[in-house]
Image (cartoon, rainbow, N blue to C red; front, side, top):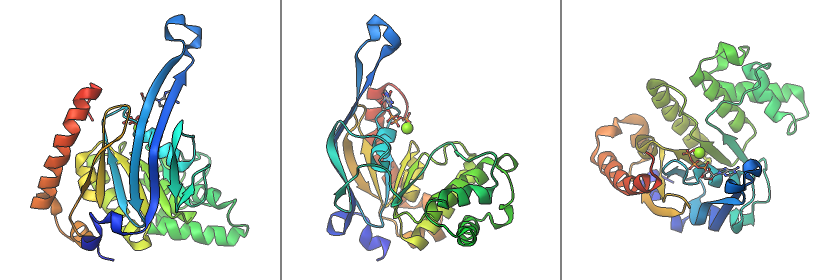
Amino acid sequence: MSNSNYAGRAGETDIKIEAIDVRKTFSARGNGRKDVNNLTTDALGGLNLSISRGEFHVILGPSGCGKSTFLDLVAGLTTSTDGTILIDGKPVTGPGPDRATVFQQYALLPWRTALGNVEFALENLEKDSRKRRETAVKYLDLVGLGDFCGHYPFELSGGMKQRVAIARAMAVGPEVLLMDEPFAAVDALTREILQHDLLRIVYETGKTVLFITHSIDEAVFLADRVSVMTARPGTIKAVVPVLLTRNERLSDDIKVSEVYTGTRHKLWELLKEEAAKAGVSG
Ligand SMILES: Nc1ncnc2c1ncn2[C@@H]1O[C@H](COP(=O)(O)OP(=O)(O)OP(=O)(O)O)[C@@H](O)[C@H]1O
Ligand SMILES: [Mg+2]
């Protein structure tokens, strides 16, 4: 399936992830302070979204609008106050090997090498240690770290650590990759290289990706479709297809193309109102 047919036609394809009227309210105890007792935050206010199988879907929204809250719900790390999240038509009831998450912070085990970190993720899935090693090496190769298997996290750059985190997520063979601002902590050049490599890997493996970012440029470069969220309580304000083919993204300098700049402008117009409401920049 070529991306030019795919982008913007999600409704016609298989739905992989579906959120139906998802709400999440947090209660803060306030540590006994009377003035903050029973303080509640409505993080998500009835979010509806469908993501197709094999889609690269990016969520863009102002700080505090509920992006991470939503991703955690899809990952099964928390439960919603109301509404349903379906994966392949079945409600999410907890974490599972069909989903893997990459967070902004690398979350690597400092006492294990790059190889050891990836192997660790496989311990519950593969009993044979030789096969575990083979799989771990394969995925470290895929992210370009074949020569760094024996390095400990403190011996790796920020970008390399995030590559290990991606290898670890991919190695467990998830169908869905959940990424919460995974490149926010790396420098601009490394970020561009990681974005490019991520697209290559995702296209090769056919994963469904739900990716969160504050960056409009990152959203346009990566996404088949971008969902813009409202200020809290977060809902989906608009879903914008990015009408670039997958080949174009990997081969051309698409950032000067009219589709790129036009989509960028559209997203900025949608986001700036919400950022103003949130009182913070997106
Ligand atoms: N465990 C929690 N307990 C109480 N409130 C929470 C909790 N987690 C998140 N919140 C609140 O829910 C709202 C949404 O938070 P969330 O982390 O989902 O935002 P976000 O869109 O990911 O923001 P950012 O872009 O800054 O990462 C915020 O007001 C936050 O204070
Ligand atoms: Mg967040």
